[in-house]
Image 1: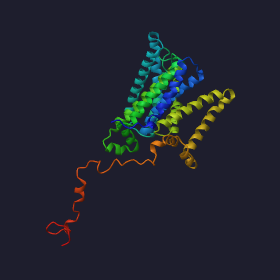
Image 2: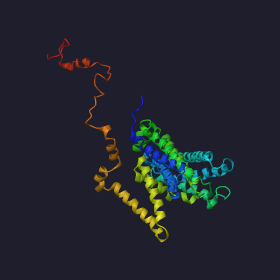
Image 3: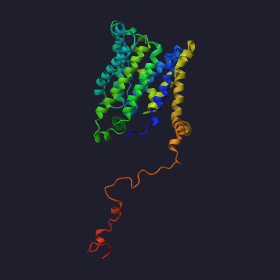
Image 4: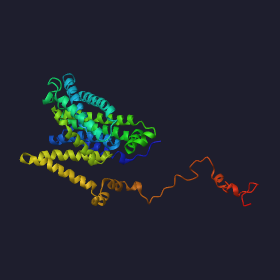
Length: 378
């Protein structure tokens, strides 16, 4: 029996899918999009994949990871190097793109397993320190490589994928990320992960393999960070290790926190908004005004945080939000005036004992019964 279709479970697929289809139709039918707009779309897709994947660890597992940029760095360098080696043989086409994505994702997943086995025995601040150290170690390793291998301090020169198609493939990968992450969270494995977040001791007592699910979640998160890294290498002509520092991991964490812990749709909105603000501020504030970029960016983030958490604005937030809008849009499905028959009627629900047998049972206490077995006082 098919489960009832719930549109709110698929609203993010629908919006992103429609947007991608429209922009792809414009591009593929000869229309021209501004290069800066295409660049922003590529960055938004990368940010969404990073935010959604980190939300698995921070929002649903409840662990703090500050090394997400390290997994992205591994994917960017290994995926970019794979593209460099395959370009002379296969050209800079779809086959090179797919193989590079798979290599970057696989290597990032292996790193997630290697780091996750010892690190996930720790909790809280200690886990954050270990993941932060991993990110810094990866950055230093690639920075000190030879120019023939990974470019050293100057970075690795990677082939820039065709702008006409890259943002389309990037948003297709966004849909793949959403499909994997959301189905994982809504499965029995996802319920085990959220149980670990809520109370690890209780989850362990009920028979949940805590280490297994922690490692699985951490590895899945690292895999999609590697995918985002490969997309980054195709979006830029050079991959430099300095890009994937501590600040980048904090930026990704900010997207997750602003979007709401454990909210996939919130992470998507926050990643899109922050990327848009970052690019627009860098474009508008040039020259002497460039020093104001970080100041204005920080002020906007503070305003968003205050709006989301201020008690005085609680009534306004509850009255005007996306959930209220969706309920109004779908009100006909939840109209209380339409009273439905009770599906739990006694003549429908199968029971082992007939109702007339239940009602005929003598409930008189044994001590109040006479010697003949009939009810009544002696």
